[in-house]
Each structure stands twice: as C-alpha cells, then as structure tokens.
Length: 373
Image (cartoon, rainbow, N blue to C red; front, side, top):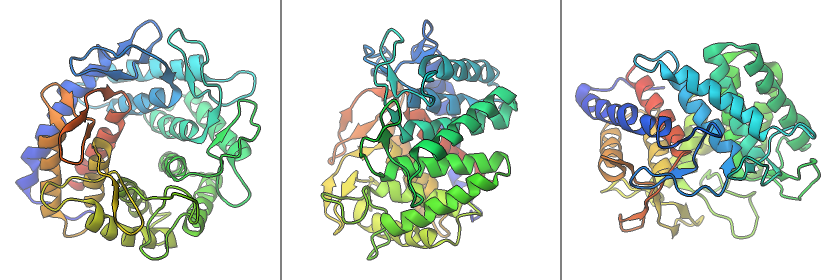
C-alpha cells in the first residue's frame, strides 16, 4: 500500500503535471489531431509537425481514448468529453470489422483497412479504454463495446490453459503465434479496469486464471522474473520496465495481491532494480538476459514512468521516488515535449513523440496523485 510522502516531492510533481496538462495534452488537441479522420497522428516530430502518416492503429486510438477519458470532469478540461466521444466513434467507424467481428490492427492514411489481422494487444487496450470511458460517461453504447471486446477475447483468443493467442488472422483462423507477455499484461490491465467499474464474475475468473497461467508459463523460478516469451523459448529475455509494470498491477489489485504471481514479481522487482536501473542516473535499461547482462541499454520513457509509478507502492522508497521523478523531469521532459528514447550513454536516440506515450505518463501521474492521497 502507498506510504505517506513528505512535502519534498510536491513541487516536482506539480511541475510535471503542469508540463503534462499545459504542453503534452494540447499537442494531441492541435497538431497531433487529424481532423479529417478524427484520429491522432501516429507521431509528431520535435517541432510538433505530424510525421508523414503510414498508418493509423486501433491501439493508438484506444490509448488516446483513455487519455481524454481520464481528463473528463477534471478542472479546466471541458474539452475532454468531446474529444473522448470523437475517439470512441472513430474506433468503431475505422477499425471495427463488421464482417468477422473484432477490430482491425490498422488502417492506411486514407482510412481504408491496412493490416486486417486481429491482435490481442489491440483488443486489450480497447477493453482498457472503454472501461475507463464508461466509468466516466455511463453510456450504454460504451458498455456494449466493452462487452463485445471482452466476448471476442474470451471466444476467439482464449486457449484452454488460461492464456491467449497473441495474433489471429482476420477471420480468426490461427497464425500459430502462441502467447506473448506484453499483450497478456495489458489484457490483465483491461480486466482490472473492468472490475474497477463493475462487479463481473466472469472477468474476475478470467483474470485469476490468467495470473495462474502466467506464473506457470512465464515466470523464471530463480528470480521470479516475468519473461517476454514462455519459459524455455529460444532467445528469451526480460525487460525491467515490464517487471515494474506487472508489480504495480498486482500490488494495486485486491484480487491479485497475495497470489503466487504477486510474490514472484515482488522478487523480480529487486532483481530488475539491481541489474537494470543505474544507481546514479536512475536510467532503466531496455532488455536484459536472464543472468543480468544488458542486451539493449536503450532508455525508454515508458519504462522510466513505470518504475516511478511502481515505487509509489514500495514502502521505504521516498528517496528513490524523488530521484526518479527528477530523472524523468530532467532527462526525458523538455520545453517542447519529451524524449522518447535515450541510448545507453544517455543521448537522445529517438526524436519523435508517438501518440501512444501520453498513456504511460497519464497512468504514472495517476499513481503519483494516488500516492499523495
């Protein structure tokens, strides 16, 4: 559970919240918004110009739906409900597959279906976004879409062992993708968002079955690490950011707290900190081998945000919280937006600003605000 923070963190928190509300959110109201398609551009450059669109993804639309839904009812954010409603309509208009059900992965720059496959990652974010949006507006159509997404996941993606296929063909035929960690984590996040807004025995049962299956298939027994592919798969690795993200979901959930998976990720947190976080700068590395050797030292803003959020649920972490909040502010946030990636030496390696990143910042800041009570 969160511990009582001192007032030392409050000025830093106020600074990053002001940066978010006054700079980052307006980027996606103005230059980041394609008025014709009523969709966010995939990314902006360092000067706030949209990168030439190659595609628009349903997942990106859903993440932005969450972003604006989270602002509904907040002081000074009257625009949020209108933008969330537009994103919800676009999700259905552009990406819903009227013939086979479910949602396409992407459309082309002219609004025509591009990648027609059905992936779990996309559907997980549709569940997540619709649950949050319905919590704010309570419109029957929003709950109907939430229910449809839950049904598709249960009927089409689910396997008989509590896990789910990562990708299926448009007509739901198999691509032999098997399960992958990241979409399964976001499905758990979507299930938790659903349970936060309504009692749902089927969703709770699916969540617990998923947690049991993740413990059995994805957890390295030595360190409790959540691997990216099932244990035993060729060329496997772990990502510190995902250990922190899983820990937050498990620790914050009354349903999942106390499960074997929760115990595993509590152990993994310490190992991920030891091997994947620089003690001086607070930089979170991208990918590590099981033995702790860094395979990709890229520092991504989402991993920084997830580590910061997870620390709010680790007793005795106030000094680390202050260090990590300062690291996020000084190394990743700047006067024109944010740095998406730094290389292993701390130099900017990716200058564009994707429309999907504000989701990570919004959930991080929500965790910090909850920490402050």
